[in-house]
Amino acid sequence: MAARVEGVFINVPFDRQYESLFRALVFTIHECGFVSRCSLEVGDGSVVRMETLYRIIRQCPLGVHDLSRVALTRGLPRFNMPLELGLFLGAKRYGGRVQRRKSCVILDRDRFRYQRFCSDIAGQDIRAHGNLAAPAIAAVRDWLRGARPSKSMKGGAMIEKRFLSFWEELPRAYRENGLDQRQLPFLDYRMLVAGWIETNPIGVAKGSTVSVIRRNTLP
Image (cartoon, rainbow, N blue to C red; front, side, top):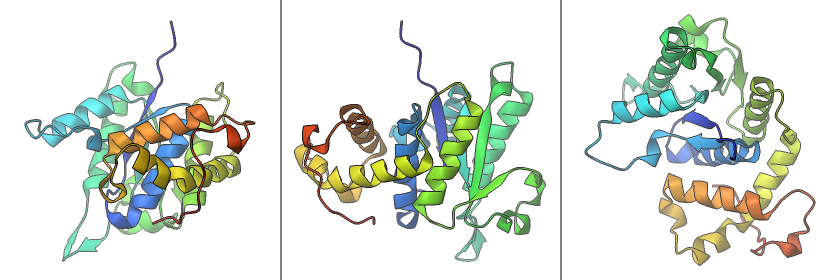
């Protein structure tokens, strides 16, 4: 019987400005041998969003939390990400034996910016990405490697290179699957990521892949 793939809860902004980072993180998680999970996977309007978050957090032993969008918006700060981080840490602190084994990484655009709005997490290892995909990929990969030391993973530079190759191939994948790249649901994107990784193992020449790689820029 195949071992169950561990889920990684993604608690990040879902706005347009963060989209390239979000997609890079999803790719990194799958490239490292895990499965990405987030609240976007549920579209049932009859389910209260907090209940969805409780369920996903309970099911995921690992979590990625990005606080880089905690800032004033029309006079009010956005605290969704700190709230979900608190839920994750609360599950680890007060949950049962399985929940107490949770591990997470906290990201921000600057390493010490959190001190201005969430000083209670002082002492946590905050990893800065500067709003760039490469350091975000490296931070998540290195954390996953430490969280699961017995698991083999590619280096951050190789993961970034493969992500860019995947990104170049995406336009064709959109067309072949009848998907709109401007409104791509999370589950569809996750499916494309998993499919590309499976059909493009390390060491296989590009000519043997199912799609032609084409040049495209990150949004």
